[in-house]
Image (cartoon, rainbow, N blue to C red; front, side, top):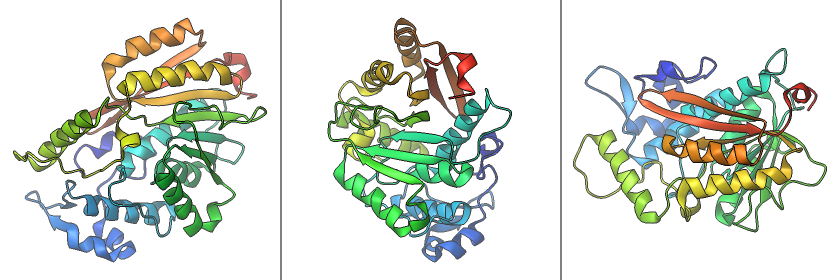
Length: 307
């Protein structure tokens, strides 16, 4: 995991090797999963879900002051460094029409599908002081995210959760008529079926273990709404783009992670047809993995600094 971390965003707190002695002091149980690899570096087996969850718990506690973070077994357990990268690139995007990166509660962000882990709002607020709203369609995930907030009462006025009752809607029923956000963000379900999600996780597990394992081991786990939806990534993001038109004056930058590069052409074509005034693709590199953020706005450039 330490190899290639230097390619993370320059402000990413996780761009250097993990200090496992420090992390174990935060979460003692982590020590049972730490070992020294053939290169003499301390690490964990990232194909073991419990190990990944304990590492996340320690990272969130040490770097972001988040206490008693936990998620149920089977829920998506995201890699913290990559999630932090999305936040830092969003900060750069917001700074384009400012004299400096905004680091205060005047910035309000919307996380679509925050999940049981609540990671994006936690990192966003702790890193930049932004106010955040997280949404989800899964009641169990929503309740767990609320439990994390309950365990961290200092966040109760900074992070708000809103349950999306209609799974076919994204911004509707969430944003009030007078409300404004500087950005929305989303890590969408990118598989089009449960079978596809399982196959994808099997490939990831094989790569982590360098083995011929035939049973998917959901090391980063994930519920149905987190990993797949009908039509996959292209259908979900297309719906988001179409719905964004109705909220074009209320969100400065709409953004979404795109896992499949080949989807960008169709999504860009849709955005142009719907008259987005600015469209950006922001590449993020984490070791050998390259992901990208699709960002679009309907606000003219000369009005963005006053949004």
